[in-house]
Amino acid sequence: MIGLYIHIPFCEKKCGYCDFVSYPNRQERMGDYIDAVIREAENYAGETADSVFIGGGTPSFLPEGEMRRLVEGVARSIGIAPGAEFTIEANPNSLTPQKAREYAALGANRLSLGLQAVQPELLERIGRIHTYADFLRALEAAQAAGFSNISADIMYALPGQTLAQAEETARTVAALPLSHISAYALKLEKGTPMYGMKQPDEELDRAMFHGIRAILERAGFARYEISNFAKPGRECAHNIKYWTLKDYVGLGAAAHSCYQGARFSNEDRLDSYIEGMTKRGTGRITYVKRSEYDRIFEKIMLETRLTRGMELAGLPQGRKFMDCVSRLELGGLLTRQEGRIVLTNRGLDLQDGVVLDLVGSI
Ligand code: SF4
Image (cartoon, rainbow, N blue to C red; front, top):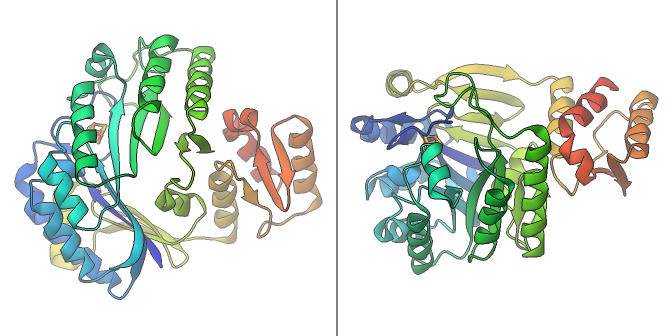
C-alpha cells in the first residue's frame, strides 16, 4: 500500500507569502495538465493507495467535472483501497456546493480548507482572496455534501498580527464543527512579495503558538504533531505516513515521492512537466537512492515531530547517541517511553536543535 499525493499547481491569484509551486492565470493548461497526471499514474499501474491527498495550489479551483476526470483517470492505474483516507484541499472562495458534492461522490471523505485568519485586515495584508464569511459558506457546503472530517489551516506570526488576533482566530475555529486544525507559523521566503516585512519577534511568536495550543487543547483538539491538532481518531493518516517514512508517490508538477528506497521529485515548471510527461512519460528531475545515513537523518528529523515520539528501534544506539539522549532528557527536552523518545513541549519548540544534536551523535 502506498500514500498517493496529487499536486494541482493552479491558483486564482498568488498570495503575498506563497512560495509553493502554483501558477495564477494558467487555466488554459488545466486540461493538458490533468492528461499528464493521468499519464504519470500509469507508471505506477498495479499499486494501491490507502491514503490519497489532492493538494496544491488550489484543487478546488479546477472547474466542475475536472476533478472527476482526474480521479477516475488516475484510479485506472492506481487503486484506492476501501476505507482509504481521501483528502482534497479547498479554498473557501472556490468550494461551491456542487464541487463539494462532486468530491464526496468521488469517494473523498476529508476536506482541508485554508482559512489562515478571521480578521479581514489580516487576510487582505497577506493577499488572501476570501473572507471569513466565504469560509463559513464553504464549511456549510462541505457539511451539506456529507463531509464530517474537515480540517482548517490557520497561521500566526503574520506581519502586524497581535497576540489577541492570533488567539481570536484559534478560539473562533475551535468552536466550529471541525475535526482537525493545522496552525503554521508564517515563514517569509526570499522572492515572495511579502519577503522582508516585519514579523512578530521570537517571544511574541512563541506566545502566539502557546496561546493557540492552549485554546485548541481546551476545545478537545489534541496536538499530535508540531503544527497539527485533531479530535480523537481524526489525525491525518496521509501526513503521518510522510512523517514515518512510509512509501508515498507524488504525481504532478513539483511533486515528491518516497518510493521503493528512493526519493525523487518532478519538474516544477508547468509547461515542462506537461511536455515531459506527454512526450517521454516522465517528469522526474531528481532521483536519489537513499543511503543508510539519509534514512536515519530523515527518521530523526520527521518522527520527532510527532507527539507520540520516535521509535528507537532502527537507530544505531551507540554510547554517544544514548549519552546525547540522556543529556536532552536532563535538559527537559525529551522523555523516554517504552522504546521511544518523545519530545516535550519545550523540545518541540526547539526541535531543529534537538534534531541536530541527535544526528550529530550518530
Ligand atoms: S492559495 Fe495556497 S498555493 Fe495558492 S497562492 Fe495562496 S498560499 Fe499559494
